[in-house]
Image 1: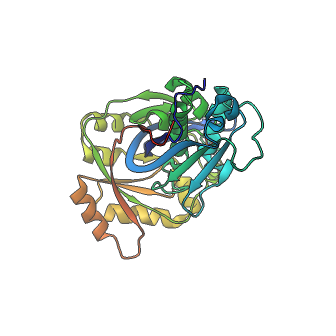
Image 2: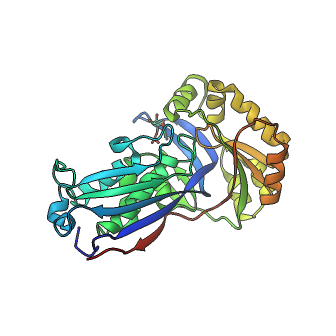
Image 3: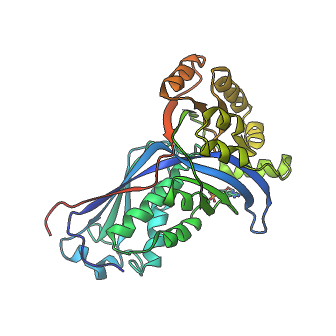
Length: 329
Ligand code: C5P
């Protein structure tokens, strides 16, 4: 429950990593319309940062009773394709947490300067790129606001709230390396030794996850591929074996919608990547390298105009919380 332990001006920052799917097999369609998956997820070192703070008239604005009608306000740089206001997954996560923990229990007040929580989002994870950018922001909001509002909900409960917001949110709440089944929300952490280096090939044209799954329905059959080779390569710290084992059943569907992606995957392999795979439902493609120097070599060998690349290592932990206190009480 909310308390008054946060002084006026306090803010909390959470840095949250992107995710990649090292393995994804689609086992079939579920009764709820989602697809049954077996997938291996890992966080990768491309980070969004979310800063949350309380605002409003000193005293009144910080009082839990006043907060029951507060607004959630979102601020971010103008980024193409990023959902705004209450459509943004971070705001939706904040509202879900506020309602579940009883922090907000009424309609938001009308006053401009009334009590509010401000969410400031600094994005580096590509929007609609298949790297769980929106889900990472939702996870960051759950973790940050759980602290700011003193809800004291356990991570397990945050994962449950996250599952209602999106299939990748529970994983983003914990991070690390996980084997997921069901919709992608039933998680078990798996062993990963060492670090892996990726060259992410970004794409400016977003690809809708729902559209990729619909395409899978039209053209693909349930798969029985198992993730054993990926899990073994992670345990053995073996990038070449991992490169050979990378697998994503959504590639056939995404490549049917965007044939240029198949070509871009080929370019990563021709440039010397140990393996290449579509990240989630795309359109980001990932090439696996031996180390950052190798990743730079691969990037340099890509034909001019292939697109923007980012080098990042995995796993990248989970949401990282920083509590900062400023201003007067
Ligand atoms: O769960 P999330 O909101 O991220 O999913 C976006 C869309 O992707 C869903 O509306 C659904 O069409 C599809 N999806 C699916 N099966 C999954 C995950 C996602 O069909 N396991």
